[in-house]
Image (cartoon, rainbow, N blue to C red):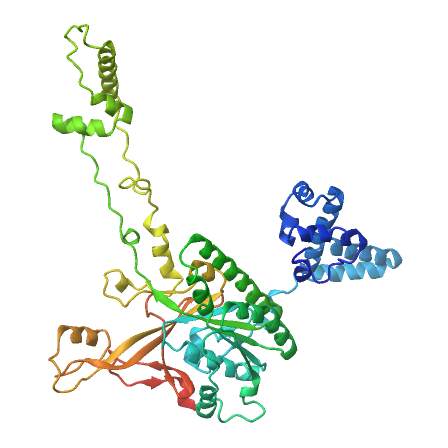
Length: 544
């Protein structure tokens, strides 16, 4: 099969009973999932193979999967037979062994909860405040995404992780080298050297424990074809040979946006991109789990414009009782609630029923008017139908509940839009991580880096203070006194959107950690008051 060697490397494909079946299955592009889910008759119809042989192969694959997971029935039967043989040879020893086995906890899984807790490893960001927000750092065995707009500090955080991965476990690292795959700019070795010289936790280390540029392997992928080749073939070999503990992809969206935007809009291009993203996610997840390493990718963002349907839906006004309406309005309302056939028949010119029909008057018109009068009498005696639900038909179109729309749901997994200030239109611009919902389902954790401008005092000849300056001051930004406000710097925050090991930061900037980019890397800061207080570094920088 196309993926049997990858899913079950130890499966005996060379045995005669399987070797003659696999070529036909390969020609039909059947996967291991197809053998486990499709009916035997369907597989036989496509491959023209004997049904009994196909059934034996499917059972063998299923048994091999169970054995690989440690839940095989044959293993339990063999253990039971071994205990019975021991009891037959030595009843006393068998009884003692059975008592000992009963005292032990029976587990058929590969790892227990204490074993998994002991294997838990994270890569530090070299800052206690940021590590506290991330639950200790970036975990191994998962795909973590760092998303944010340009200039938010994504690459700075990735470079810090490349150095921290080489530290011993006692200092927050893994003691293993790192691999950096670039899709845009090459690896900035100058910036790495600057961090090594200025960071207080790195510059004073012994040469044997200090990270170096030799522990970082870099590769450039200028297009999607080279990226696919390097990640599929070269990266697994390099990871196994060097014992890599961190794989960084910076950035994941660059090649996909350049490749599929050239093809133009269309459902075919989106479907092809979705398949490629799923395959990339499966490949990175296999690397993370098989080699117990951390996969960190950076992602770009795009502007998001919420649709009006997600914000509010018009509430239909209940119709007043029919008897309280005037006769003309009641007739018009009645005509709109009739079937099309009844409406067309009502529009005909019908003579008075008391007039005797002449030879020029068709009898069908008289009969139609009589049937119509009878239908109106029947409808008047029937109760009024209940109004349709709000979420079924509004204005002739079918709508879902606003809470079920993507525009409302994505605020909880994108990192932007969960602040109540976004609802009234006064919040910052909405952003959305690139590659859409498909890529969001492939990652295990998403960390958003937010930034907002900080304004300072302008020159004395500037325009007087405006109401906008007061709003900036209330929001924590400094405004000009006696002059116009001008951009002084940028304020940045790190926010955990979702993760398997730590709770989200919260709505808006609640719980988000503010940080700054220095020559030593990222450093968490605390502000007192409304943005004008003294800046206080975290405990790590103070201790250093």
